[in-house]
Image 1 (cartoon, rainbow, N blue to C red):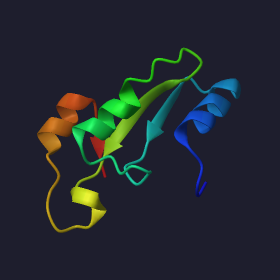
Image 2 (image 1 turned 120 degrees about the horizontal axis):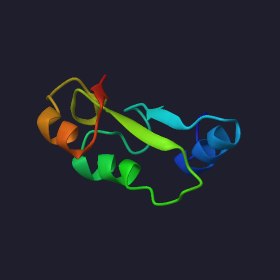
Image 3 (image 1 turned 90 degrees about the vertical axis):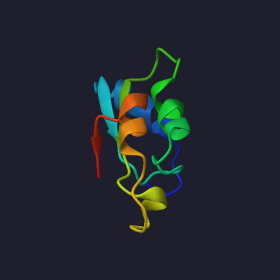
Length: 81
């Protein structure tokens, strides 16, 4: 939902029985840099499901320049959209 943060949504998903979540690239922040991927994948709270980021194909999702897909994959993105 608009304005929601990842933490409460992930915690609610775990309480509903979901053990893994795919995180789309169009969140806040956009998943187009390694720092943003690491922010997702390095969650240390055991009360969260496993988080799998999907990287943005282009910088800021603007369609103007390709994101560094190799770096994003190495940081933990499992797919691109």
